Image 1: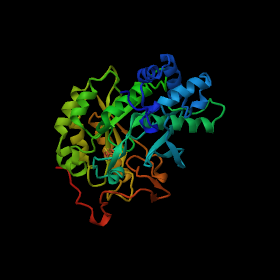
Image 2 (image 1 turned 180 degrees about the vertical axis):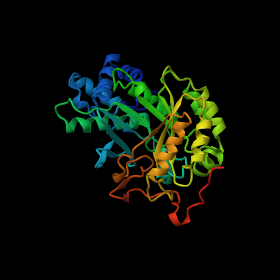
Image 3 (image 1 turned 45 degrees about the vertical axis):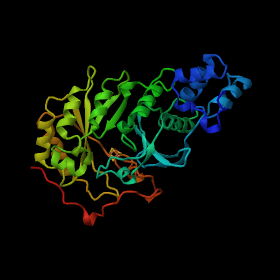
Image 4 (image 1 turned 120 degrees about the vertical axis):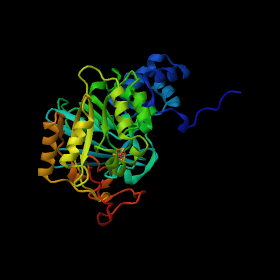
Length: 381
Ligand code: SF4
């Protein structure tokens, strides 16, 4: 007995297919492989969202393709613009969930920060996304489509076509990318394909809170993005308190995995260090950090905490930030200070929680700690 014809929902989403898969689906629909490639190039190379846009494919072939493949798209629910030029996009998924993505212009470069999950299961205490809890993983098409929708927005703002384009991509938005490993890897293969968006893997960074076994797996992949690790502490006592994942994979295990990570020539691991006043910003912590990372091919991005109502921490004073950085540099640790971007629209690092004009659009699932009942700040021994 033959299988029943696919219902609308059974059709694979062209956004989530690799080129090979799209070609194979075309064959199952009784079409030559190149028809799958043509359609794939429209969606992944040109950002098409409908069959009607595919002007080099005749209507009869489009109908055949549409019978077996759907073209999903994220809906742009809101575009918020910061006074510093940062743009925050809120998207709605097909099943009605909200995710966010941020475009950060910097000179002639534009970096897009994309989400990999609806919410996040990793409970970093300083992060607004953590308070949403995890709803579900994004599929590869939803991850890639954040880039296509952002490109469409930039193109619409500059119809001449010679203006801003996305040059760098960071998986640092909502979610822990390595918790959604397979879909993130598929999205990387799709986004770096020459016939699609054609992004260079050297310009893509995946940031992790430190899922050690997945770091080992990532190191063995043929597509290997730059690696950023959210470290945020110079010892296990502080990291246990602000990043509970450390209780499972402590700093020693994390750094051993990073040391084993194969780095190409002239590439370095980036350690992110969110500076929290009276928690991890002392000169002793800077010294401990420099000691910890000695011998690693790395740099440290210092990120002064971006306040939000879901966390009780404070940003250190500019003097404390400067002193911390100077001490790291004095001890030979390459350290860069990240200027907060988009904090007036809740788009800065650690602030993504589907907030519009200061209002939460999605209820938080995790308890939010009021400033008055903040846990005592762990100090550095
Ligand atoms: S910092 Fe990243 S990994 Fe940690 S809770 Fe936030 S989104 Fe998740």
